[in-house]
Amino acid sequence: MAPTLDDVASIKDLINQLQVRVEQMERSLRNGGQATPVEQLRMILMGPPGAGKKEPQPLTPRAPPLHQQSVMDSLWRWVANSLDW
Image 1 (cartoon, rainbow, N blue to C red):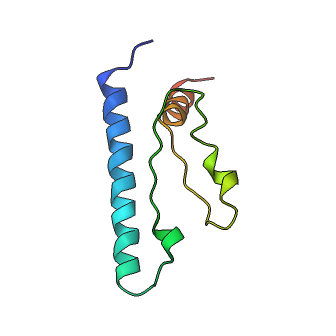
Image 2 (image 1 turned 135 degrees about the horizontal axis):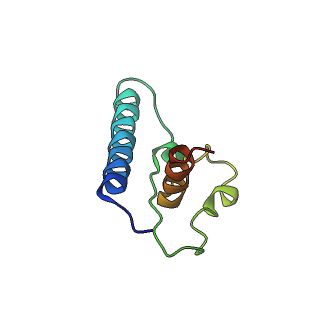
């Protein structure tokens, strides 16, 4: 099934929400808390399906937990919420 304009709009909305959250976190860090270099790190991993983009989390044991969001996860969640079981 090909994505629709609504699918694209919902993914754009999710990206905008994430951007707003990142900006809020950056403002809070600037206004008081001193973040370590690891906490300031922002990575966007891109690649084909199955390339291991979700693997860096176990490789960084001292780093704070990473927020992982993939387009496929978003699509699966959207499909699950759209179906009436």
